Image (cartoon, rainbow, N blue to C red; front, side):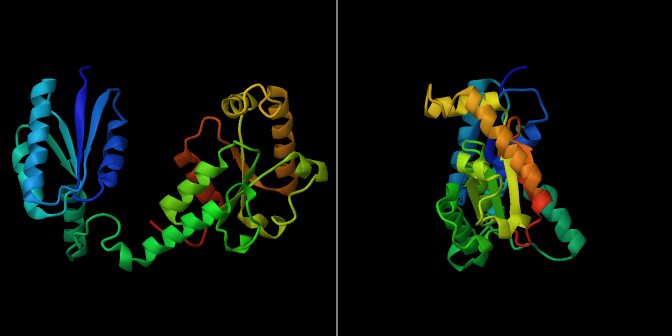
Length: 275
């Protein structure tokens, strides 16, 4: 099929429009050029955006598809009128917010983005605090304040703990610690003592030995650390320890960060979640 161009138009960052649009478009086996147009918050900017959409249509010889999360009525009006009967416009607010206003009997606040004023948003400040906490507790840097953790991730080095920790902090405002399981832990045959009191918050990550060896070789090629034999041994020890300790765990080998995080949330069920 012929390639198409998708525009994500928003008066905020455009992340919501892009996430929504990509999720929908993933249902189709079709390559697409993706263009995010953020901060379209005036009529003038909307006219410029419309000009870019029209120029792309002429260059491609195909009608672009436009995903919108525009809140301002006048700005949306420019895009909607320009796309009318010419380009496909999928507007999240008219599709979802308007029916909800009717159902709930109240008007939405027409807020741009997740946080209308970050300086006054407790949820935003909590999210920043969670990110800072997760960075400070990355890779076992400190064992202090582990009781404040919403989730504690364990696993061998390069099994996906750090990106998962940061995703949970940034996306859900969770304070996440992560702790690498190392040969000294395997020799003791039990979890590091600092983690034992918080076992109900612990979730384990593992990975296929061949994939782990590939990842480690990118960092330290031809080292014992990256050798397949060492990876097999470490993973076998780590998985045995998690089984003995009754820790829930999963393999990250074929899982996306989003899938890993969703599984962790289903299993751990943190009391505090920000959206």
